[in-house]
Image (cartoon, rainbow, N blue to C red):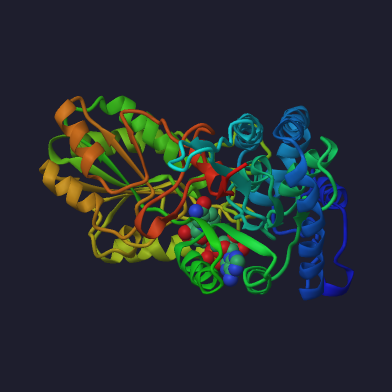
Length: 473
Ligand code: NAD
């Protein structure tokens, strides 16, 4: 939509998209969002400035009440919001509901953390004086969130920022705009004062080029691809803005010959195909010890062939359409390249079922390291398997790439688990089960996967600044 009619309410965005429920599953226009131009972005920052003055002065209990209220509204509205998310993003409706309730939990976690942004008193060496270490909100935050988890990625940033007392200008994804608008509507309905959260959609580069250098904006938080994250981090560095960067991954999943193979296959297939693989922490390089390699490939194949591809709105669907045509093209190119370089396609490997951006869940075995998929983040429904011989081989392959977000290991041996825990370079490691991405746990990567945390105690810290006040009466 053009820049000159950019102000619309969150409610209007949601209702336009809601009216599309029941339309054919894809290839139809389901709604429009307003595009923010420079004047709108500056107006959003000005509104945030007013909102910040109010919100930083609100007690942590008041902030917590709004976050908790929004969590309750999200839960109460989950059945209305989930089909909107499925329609605009593609994921199965059951997954959309899980995302909404998990987001409610994220808001509740930060509501609790709001009350625990403790400073401290340092015993003074100067008689009669007091050294106070105070925590204050960093200021106005510019937040950029992606289309794969339209509500929960926004909930992580908004929850932490609002708990800390910050105001936010958020650019949710233009490709899935209505469900994040529903999150913001829940905050408004729970009593969030005007100006504290401001939603803009637009041309991503134009929005970041206006917001990041803006003198009133003090903190940048981005979730998305590594190349875009590096670009935005450099811009933020040039303007001395604090950053949180949650970027791409290429998670190794190491399966040793002493692992419970059935359990490993169950956990890894569920984690891999959630949201059709469009997940930054999805297991990607399945490294399987040679003695159990053939058997494990069979176990994976069985489970993959039981998945059901279809429109996300249908209750039986376990893999919905991909979020956009770029993903289908990217997956086709990666699969063709892998097969040309010697990979064996065990199952799947086709796109274009029906009307929509579908891609069959795919298993590629004997993956050569030269294949692009073993180096670039596939971000789609493709399992890549390669054999290994020794622990040393597995760890060295796990650490070969510049990514360092999630990693998985399956073994019955404490010694091997210890090797994974201590030597794999990743921000989040889960051994013998799925145990990451919960609200109370740190969420973030190392190396090219980013900087900072979007969960746990650490998340709120990145929206606070430390001020020392040393006072003599
Ligand atoms: P992309 O690199 O074009 O965009 C990724 C995200 O960044 C989008 O949300 C987009 O709106 C935003 N963006 C792009 N350029 C921007 C700019 N100059 N300023 C501000 N925001 C900008 O890629 P895409 O095709 O949308 O997504 C594909 C890739 O993105 C995937 O392969 C994956 O690596 C990555 N991704 C990661 C996550 C994650 O959770 N870490 C989520 C979505 C996408």
